[in-house]
View 1 (cartoon, helix red, strand yellow):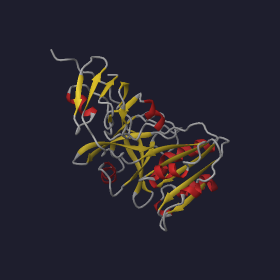
View 2: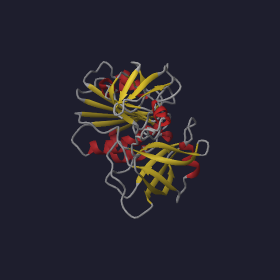
View 3: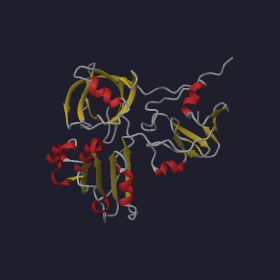
View 4: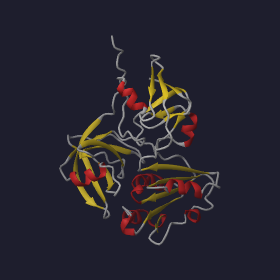
Length: 326
C-alpha cells in the first residue's frame, strides 16, 4: 500500500472584479479590485501584499504574482494595487496590463505581510519607482503617530515616479524626490548621521536594498528592512542533498537541478506554494535539523541565522541533509 499523501492546505482565495483602472506613469497602472459577491474583503496591515492569479500569463498558463497593497487598510470594500509593466516582466505584469480591463474577474489570496512596520524612534522610507507602493500605507501609519519620518522617492524623472503628486499633497515636506537622470543618487549623503533607533524601509528594483545597506553600514544603531519586487538570484552553485521528513523518516534526494518543493511534489507530499520564486513566503517549512542555504527574498538576516525555517521553492542545503517538520 502506498504511503498517505501529506497535504498542506493552499491559501484561500476570493474572486474580485476590476472596477477601475487608471495610468499613474507611462509604465504603471493602478487597479481597483472589489469583491465579486456582496461583502467585505479580508483585512490587511500596512506593508502587506496580495497574491493575484493572472490568467493567460507566460505561455498561456495562469501565474501567481505578488503586488503590494497601496490603499487604506481601513477600507475593506476593495483592494488597490499598482502594476509596473517592466521590460523584463516574467509574464504576470504584462498579462495584467493587456487582459485586466474594468469588469475582469480575478482570483486573489488573503493579504500577507512580510514587510510590517516595526517600533522605532525615527523612520526613513526609501522608495525606488514602483517600490513606493507598500510605503504609502506604512508612511500613513507613522504620520498618525508622533514619530519623525521622511520618505525618499527615487526614479529617473518625476513623471516616472508613481503616486508622487498624491504623496506630496498628503505629506508635504516629509516627501522628497531624487531623480537619477543625471546620475546615481548619493544615498550615503542622504542617509548620513541618522538618529539612533532609526528604521530604514527600502523597496525598489535592482540593487537599491544593497546600496542602502552599504550607505548605513557604519551606523550600527540603524535597522534596515527590505522588500524586493524582483525574484532573488538563485543561480549560485548547486549540489544534490537529502531531505528527510520528521513525521515518517522518509528520505528523498534533491538533485542539483531540482528544488525541495518539486521533489516533495514528485513523491506526493504537497506543500502549499504560490510564486515558486522565493518571493511570497507561502512555502515556508520549519527546519528540524541541517544547515539551510537560504536563497529567498522573504526571511530577514536574523531569521536566516536562526535556521528555523526555509522556503522550499528555492532554498537549498549546506550540510548535505535537511530534516523538515513535515
